Amino acid sequence: MIRNALLLAALVAAAPALAGDDPPGKPAEFKAETRDCLQTRSILQAQAAPDGKWYARLRDGRWWRNTMECPTLQPRRALVHSSPIGSQCRGDIVQVIDFNLGGVNFGGCGLGSWERVAGPPPKPPKNTKSED
Image (cartoon, rainbow, N blue to C red; front, side):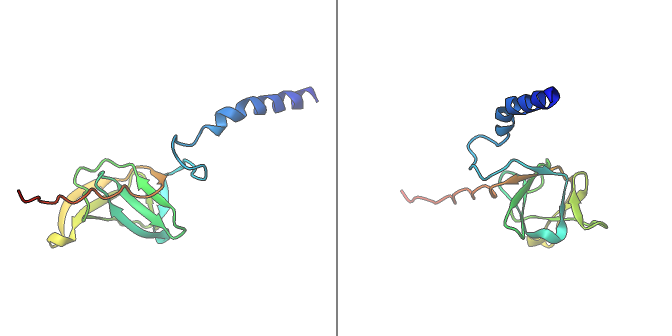
């Protein structure tokens, strides 16, 4: 009985520390989450963003960002991935291809971990030329 009381006291003391796991400034319903793999068949949409990261929206509406460092990844370029297990996992090598340039291959990059995000970053505003 004393052991149960000590366990309960430890859990109560740890609760405030556990409650702070979410990133600051995120909505209460957003939970910080990372994964090593995403199932390819679950990905509904994927895109490169101006921040140089790869974003994927799953069929359930959740967005994930890959933490890889890939200097040749830019908007309007695609990642080509092949997997015998049907997942995109940390450490997998992907090819950066620009199909707008006829399929030019910009080399390979290794995928990082996947982290849940609210969505891709907003597109930067287009430069408008002002006439003086």
